[in-house]
Image 1 (tube, rainbow, N blue to C red):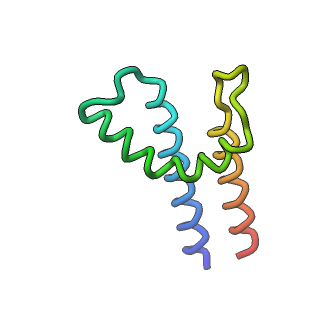
Image 2: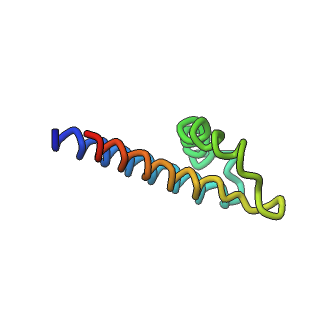
Image 3: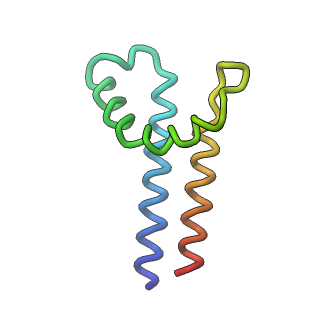
Length: 87
């Protein structure tokens, strides 16, 4: 049972890191071409389905600053911790 809990936490932490890298890459200029663009698109396919859930409900602050990734990361960690407590 401990191995399952550890696996769930590790996967959630890895996914959190992927989201973090995706958000940081969105700040970079010229992410449309080359290897960086390819990486950005792959990360987008992994992260956007989860992040879009929060983007629907949380509008950007001032129309510019999107805080939905922060809320998404907090929600992910909360959900994982609750699952681990239940197990």
